[in-house]
Length: 505
Ligand code: NAP
Image (cartoon, rainbow, N blue to C red; front, side):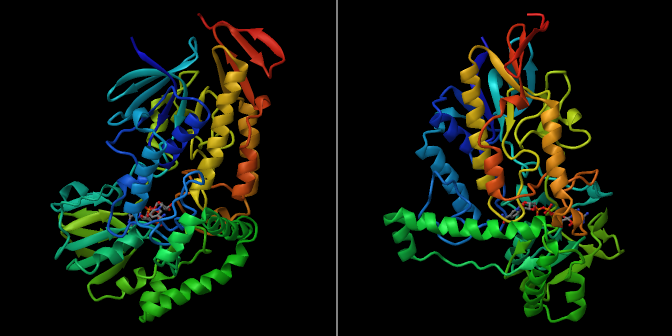
């Protein structure tokens, strides 16, 4: 017989583990966490490239319900964040729920039984509710470069680092200048023979105020947890105050550009190189990057900056859009992720037989970043328009966990075999409001192209407000925004009118 669970969570990064903790706290223990890899950690497991660290301070980039007084640095490295997530899995007794090597291949809504059929690489199961926590930065994107199959050397993506391949003494091409690349460049520059950096668009790079957290501070945070809370509160408050500039008054960010230019001028003495490294769009339009070591690395004699991006590969020769050629032994793609076209969307088949990808073909749309019309009892963590430009995603994830918890409570209160499906009118109203607020933001008006915008130029990724506003918007389920589906034959409209529909059951 096919196994049935109350909830299937997909993914065991911050979102999936957070969902698991929250479900247990809500008294839901009949759930599994399906994970395609063989350990927890999500993006913090997959991204192990040299120099990988978080650019949000650790005391804010951690769960409020799992404070960690022992963060070693203000901005901790990937290995510490990954270890933190392993620790969360242990402390909150999540191990028995974890199903490793279980990649979700297909999710199909069963309109008769009001449940999801789930096919995974390790077998099939069914679930009343699916919580998709696959993350926005989980599937690496490698551009379709002509001639890539003719390259005789080593090729890998920043999120799939090959630690068995020794870069020492090699001629290496780094493709891209995003958050990953600017951490990789200074980490590998000292050991490679030559580094060619293919830059399509220069980023704004601010100084990174990073330091070790002293033993005394850690002791204090352990003995007096309120001090760690105060630290977190301060980090949060500062970022909350910055939001207005990003969302309503991007002109104010111009002052910040001066700091970034000074950061560059300190290390780059060549005026021509400085000009090539200076962005022509408003700071904040793309993610603001933090590094004290990126520019100094670019000033080293074994580094060349090539403009225009990589456009073709002829054997071991890489050709940039401006015609510049470079012969290399290895290519590292720091070219980002499938964010607005996430692969899981192709695998979710909703109530009308359409996939989520088909339903989102004109752009991702959800209700409050969580649910979608046509996909009953399906929630996503880090869904459309829940990303942040300047603060910690963990704050947003925890808001979404509140929403998920209330979703489960509502199902219990309604009782019986029941499902909640977002009304198209509610989804549209939510998106009209979000997109209305988006117009003035730096992400839409800052004069750049970024992964925040989809193929139609619509910003379906970022939340155009404060984390407090999002917390308020996701505190509770508003049943008026949902259609209540009941098995086998009734639909209760807003809890008022009952109409019977044929489900064939
Ligand atoms: P990304 O920000 O999407 O950057 C991709 C880079 O590849 C861009 O510079 C892009 O240029 C470039 N690119 C694409 N095709 C190219 C081509 N043919 N030739 C040359 N360049 C090309 O990806 P990412 O750096 O992996 O970062 C993704 C996100 O992950 C970040 O925005 C951030 O949210 C997160 N992240 C966070 C941290 C952290 O510290 N917390 C660290 C790493 C990543 P264009 O700019 O011209 O498109």
